[in-house]
Image (cartoon, rainbow, N blue to C red; front, side, top):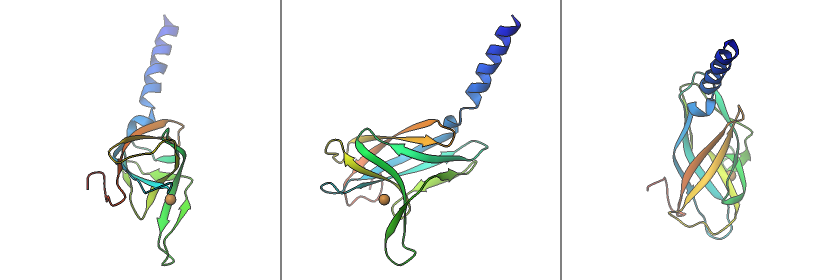
Length: 146
Ligand SMILES: [Cu+2]
């Protein structure tokens, strides 16, 4: 009787500690470029929890390689660098957008065409996975719908 009560309490605790539930993603889109050029993925993350959660990795079944990059024009020339983690502050949002953070998607496993949904699975700093559906957009797109 006692043991059962404790087990139930542990299950409840484990459920509320699920940080993946506190991080959501919206407005995901991918700018598909011609040929075999890498595609940039953009999305907005929201953390509704009380603790910082970081994005630490990304993968996609539609691409052989997915990396988290950040673009900068600090030197006056466009360049980008690999990023190990992107922290989403408690009660905060972080936008991946052209000119800033993006998911760099390379080596498509099939020709990705505009309008197609593309799944990207992010790994969070607590080990949880966050699957997000992006929409493929043409090279001249500026957002998920325009
Ligand atoms: Cu990049």
